[in-house]
Length: 126
Image (tube, rainbow, N blue to C red; front, side, top):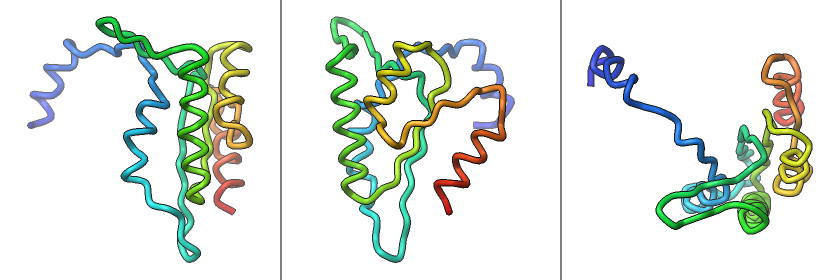
Protein backbone atom coordinates (compact mmCIF):
# COMPACT_ATOMS: atom_id res chain seq x y z
CA UNK A 1 0.00 0.00 0.00
CA UNK A 2 1.02 3.58 -0.51
CA UNK A 3 2.10 5.55 2.55
CA UNK A 4 -0.85 7.94 2.25
CA UNK A 5 -3.30 5.03 2.47
CA UNK A 6 -1.55 3.68 5.55
CA UNK A 7 -1.62 7.13 7.17
CA UNK A 8 -5.38 7.32 6.73
CA UNK A 9 -5.77 3.98 8.50
CA UNK A 10 -3.66 4.96 11.53
CA UNK A 11 -6.61 6.60 13.26
CA UNK A 12 -8.30 3.18 13.45
CA UNK A 13 -5.31 1.40 14.96
CA UNK A 14 -4.86 1.22 18.72
CA UNK A 15 -2.52 -0.77 20.93
CA UNK A 16 -4.23 -3.72 22.54
CA UNK A 17 -2.24 -3.34 25.73
CA UNK A 18 -1.02 -6.90 25.60
CA UNK A 19 2.52 -8.13 26.01
CA UNK A 20 2.46 -11.94 25.71
CA UNK A 21 6.26 -12.23 25.62
CA UNK A 22 6.55 -15.95 26.28
CA UNK A 23 3.88 -16.79 23.71
CA UNK A 24 5.64 -14.68 21.08
CA UNK A 25 9.03 -16.18 21.95
CA UNK A 26 7.62 -19.70 21.70
CA UNK A 27 6.38 -19.03 18.16
CA UNK A 28 9.72 -17.45 17.22
CA UNK A 29 11.77 -20.43 18.42
CA UNK A 30 11.46 -22.31 15.13
CA UNK A 31 12.84 -19.28 13.29
CA UNK A 32 15.81 -18.69 15.60
CA UNK A 33 19.00 -20.35 14.51
CA UNK A 34 21.36 -21.88 17.00
CA UNK A 35 24.57 -19.92 17.37
CA UNK A 36 27.48 -21.31 15.38
CA UNK A 37 31.14 -21.00 16.31
CA UNK A 38 31.74 -18.50 13.51
CA UNK A 39 28.49 -16.62 14.07
CA UNK A 40 27.19 -14.80 17.14
CA UNK A 41 23.43 -14.68 17.58
CA UNK A 42 21.61 -11.98 19.56
CA UNK A 43 18.05 -11.54 20.75
CA UNK A 44 17.25 -8.02 21.95
CA UNK A 45 13.94 -7.32 23.65
CA UNK A 46 12.21 -4.36 25.30
CA UNK A 47 9.77 -5.28 28.07
CA UNK A 48 7.51 -3.85 30.75
CA UNK A 49 8.13 -6.95 32.89
CA UNK A 50 4.53 -8.16 32.80
CA UNK A 51 3.69 -10.85 30.25
CA UNK A 52 -0.05 -10.47 29.80
CA UNK A 53 -2.77 -11.31 27.31
CA UNK A 54 -6.53 -11.58 27.83
CA UNK A 55 -9.11 -12.17 25.12
CA UNK A 56 -12.38 -14.10 24.89
CA UNK A 57 -11.80 -16.32 27.90
CA UNK A 58 -8.10 -16.87 27.27
CA UNK A 59 -5.95 -15.34 29.99
CA UNK A 60 -2.16 -15.53 29.92
CA UNK A 61 -0.70 -13.77 32.94
CA UNK A 62 0.77 -14.08 36.41
CA UNK A 63 3.18 -16.74 37.61
CA UNK A 64 2.34 -19.08 34.73
CA UNK A 65 3.24 -16.46 32.10
CA UNK A 66 6.42 -15.47 33.98
CA UNK A 67 7.59 -19.10 34.22
CA UNK A 68 6.68 -19.72 30.56
CA UNK A 69 8.64 -16.66 29.42
CA UNK A 70 11.63 -17.78 31.49
CA UNK A 71 11.51 -21.24 29.83
CA UNK A 72 11.45 -19.68 26.38
CA UNK A 73 14.39 -17.39 27.22
CA UNK A 74 16.29 -20.42 28.55
CA UNK A 75 15.66 -22.26 25.26
CA UNK A 76 17.27 -19.36 23.40
CA UNK A 77 20.32 -19.20 25.68
CA UNK A 78 20.70 -22.99 25.42
CA UNK A 79 20.98 -22.53 21.63
CA UNK A 80 23.87 -20.14 22.26
CA UNK A 81 21.82 -17.02 21.57
CA UNK A 82 22.82 -14.03 23.68
CA UNK A 83 19.66 -12.53 25.16
CA UNK A 84 19.48 -8.93 26.32
CA UNK A 85 16.18 -7.57 27.51
CA UNK A 86 15.61 -3.98 28.56
CA UNK A 87 13.10 -3.21 31.31
CA UNK A 88 11.40 0.03 30.32
CA UNK A 89 8.63 0.66 32.86
CA UNK A 90 6.35 -0.83 35.47
CA UNK A 91 7.59 -0.48 39.05
CA UNK A 92 9.35 -2.79 41.51
CA UNK A 93 6.91 -5.71 41.20
CA UNK A 94 7.38 -5.80 37.43
CA UNK A 95 11.15 -5.39 37.79
CA UNK A 96 11.31 -8.50 40.00
CA UNK A 97 9.30 -10.46 37.44
CA UNK A 98 11.49 -9.12 34.67
CA UNK A 99 14.67 -10.26 36.41
CA UNK A 100 13.13 -13.69 37.00
CA UNK A 101 12.31 -14.06 33.29
CA UNK A 102 15.55 -12.71 31.81
CA UNK A 103 18.14 -13.44 34.50
CA UNK A 104 21.60 -12.12 33.66
CA UNK A 105 20.25 -10.81 30.33
CA UNK A 106 18.08 -8.29 32.22
CA UNK A 107 18.97 -4.62 32.05
CA UNK A 108 16.99 -1.81 33.68
CA UNK A 109 17.10 1.40 31.64
CA UNK A 110 15.31 4.70 31.45
CA UNK A 111 13.44 5.34 28.23
CA UNK A 112 14.44 8.99 28.53
CA UNK A 113 18.18 8.30 28.25
CA UNK A 114 19.85 6.82 25.20
CA UNK A 115 23.42 6.45 26.52
CA UNK A 116 22.72 3.61 29.03
CA UNK A 117 21.00 1.69 26.24
CA UNK A 118 23.95 2.24 23.92
CA UNK A 119 26.42 1.17 26.62
CA UNK A 120 24.47 -2.03 27.35
CA UNK A 121 24.32 -2.94 23.67
CA UNK A 122 28.00 -2.12 23.20
CA UNK A 123 28.92 -4.36 26.14
CA UNK A 124 26.93 -7.21 24.62
CA UNK A 125 28.52 -6.90 21.19
CA UNK A 126 32.12 -6.67 22.42
